[in-house]
Image 1 (cartoon, helix red, strand yellow):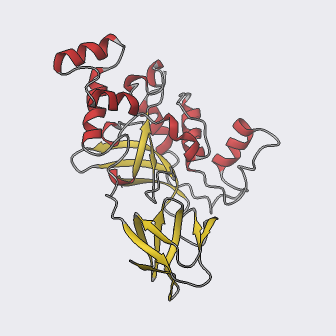
Image 2: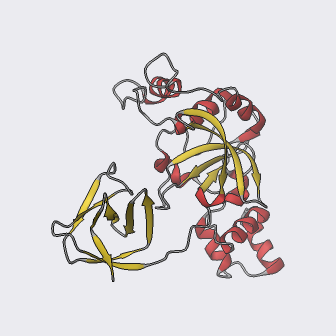
Image 3: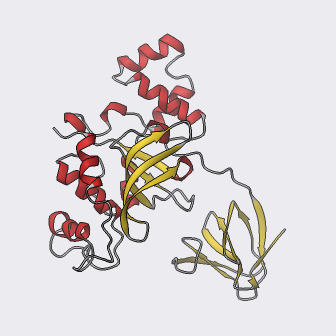
Length: 285
């Protein structure tokens, strides 16, 4: 059976690949995904411009003959619910997903090379990074949504750490008792006690099956521009519009993000421009 070392060997063999140097249409991983996974009549994964990080990870696992929960996949948010590992639990060969905008949406995926729990960073091999390349990267825990363990050496994917958020909350609440009694109760139900303990400790440190996210710094803003302002899926004009706030509406902003001279604010509805290209759209109250 394949091991994590086998997967890393295959992944490292792809380091340096660049989508812009590929002489064929799209990427080699997208063309593979379209042919082997999606089939005829589906989405055009082999087209130019299609993000390929998840398809790269899928390709590597397929080359090694390793199964993994949520894989093969091409869209990171759809892989999200297969995650069972907190950042501190990640090991060599695990898959790790990232959230760049701190909006609880998975944006990117990589393969773990190593985990430095003291520095709270991981080393990865990722596709579609560093200008469209396959490259090794170092990432902070603060960017991590969570991770998935492939089925190495015949194990069930993530089976060594079959722990979810609901279980962690029950343990923290004392539903399984304390001390030795808690250990007995968990093991009697088939749980790996050390895996549960690691997940609980990660939760208590604020990681909660991902990384410690920046604390919300709430502020109230009132829309001041006469035409109102669009609310988008992300912080930028390139993101789709969800709705619009009219002039005079007051909203709670939980996060701000600067983009050059522009300033975006995040609400429960999405992101809107507080300041954009010299114009002010909202004022703090």
